[in-house]
Image 1 (cartoon, chains in turn purple, cyan):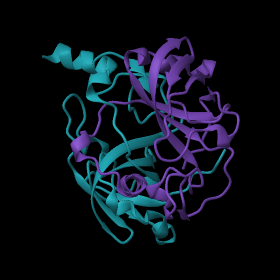
Image 2: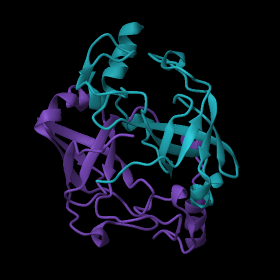
Image 3: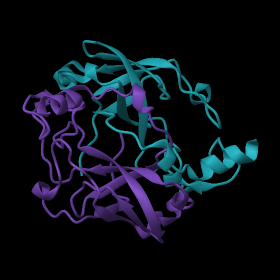
Image 4: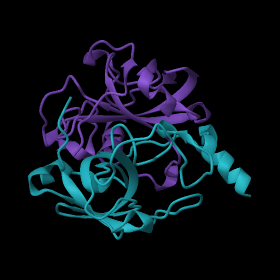
Length: 148
Length: 148
């Protein structure tokens, strides 16, 4: 296996976990900046032509993991791999962001749900979507239906 | 930072990189199995109700990285973070698969593009899609247009 290293950090409006919108209907419209380290800037070549990016990052303020947990969007426990809980065997986060503009090694994006200072592990172009009519959203859809 | 550990391995029809469909128009319809280790099986609770999953995995047969590279789908170089190249600073792969069925710790899926035996790092539910009309696919769309 490899040894993870940050390629940069997230500049986010969220200093603490409780500030991040959570639960059913939470919107992630916050703007932030992906600040890439100078030695990796060449790796951003041509990224400005993509509208959306996958950002992989480390839950660096999370310790340990739970195989079952009750997410903020439900009152029932679910398996960790069926949730986005930070308490995972490999504490890697995944966020889809909209790329607003690039300013050298700084990617201005919309949709951050990471804490300020979060280490970025990787960025990949978002290339295709699952057609909405083919998507089933499991317990989350059920939790939403119960709330109505 | 954390130390990555496998939560399981991919059973895939691809024994070698050259067997994996690549380049423009490549389809990833291959079926495979995500074999989760027994100690993590509880973490799969309720996952069977999701139609699609994000799989994070390690490029365990890739060494080193290139900040610029020419992908199989183009004849021009692009930054590594604008491609899905295996030669990345953190060699983490990301694949969206369709979950066909769960058999205990084994997830039968469609859409594998990993080599047989690839270590799995994480599984997350695929929850939402970018609306197609909002998606711009950068150099890939340009390469497709040039080929026509």
